[in-house]
Length: 232
Image (tube, rainbow, N blue to C red; front, side, top):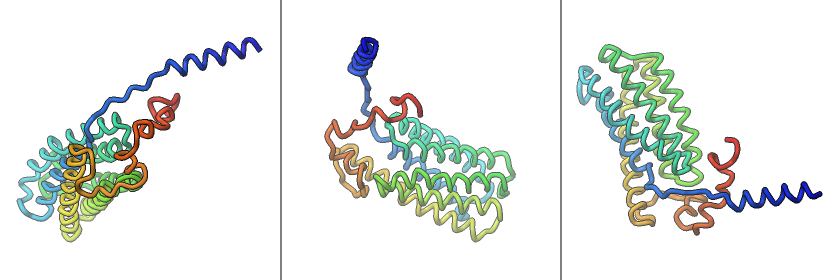
């Protein structure tokens, strides 16, 4: 009995000494969506014939030097912010832009790649996961990721089939994605600065509580989150 009492006292003392430190940061989603908009715009221009196949090297470099690093940064800060939508969604997008750009650099202008097509289709399907997660908190970011999913799948189908009609559909979907990404970045940026909703982000559930909840509500259950609990 004495041993049990000592063990319980030790556990209580350890728990009372535990400190979980949170560091306020700005939302990485605005940066991630702006990077997404720039990358999809440049690629749509190539797909819609705004410039010739000879510009594919420039497009590839834009994807690798603009889209990839900014979305990778957004993904890293998404992990730090405990936001699976930013962390996973931006991470998948960053890796996709890097891969697409590298393949475009290593293949002849105007050519397609079956391997890239398969990967892009997979990436499009993978984006459904963070999109579904976002739909339980922030509907507008969810719409951005769902649109990105369709855009990547169409681009992948074109890489597999080489069909001009599918390429045009992918380019048009890319422009729709651009519009959504710009709106989402503006809405989230204004929300971050004003500390309140200015343009609708369509927050629901926990997404609404994130802006209106008390500090205690914000950290409720944090002891069960990855990085705090013993196992992932």
